[in-house]
Image (cartoon, rainbow, N blue to C red):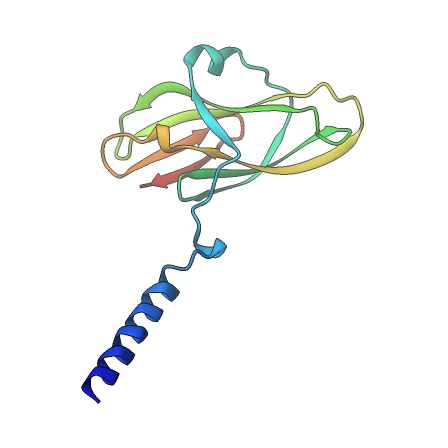
Length: 144
């Protein structure tokens, strides 16, 4: 009888741990669409075609940007999130970034897209940095 209870207990424990370790897509880490560049030269000189940033959201180490621009479908757009390399010292450290768009589409449709950028390389000492998106006048606090 004791062996039977012991075996039943072991089976329940194994079942519990296997169930807890089961990979579920809901709990997987977010994978960003692109990386973030850190370059003062590219920050100053990268294309800056007209766009409107509609919203910013940080999920884990990804900055999700919802934006719009004119075009035919946005399939040929070239986008980069570029950091200026400067770290501004204040109550919370700050970094200046801009979303660079090269848009050669000549259609009059207004296209909205949402892309995410890995911002883990923007971390500084401490546990947070304010990200100033200069071509939108938006800012967002990145806590890590």
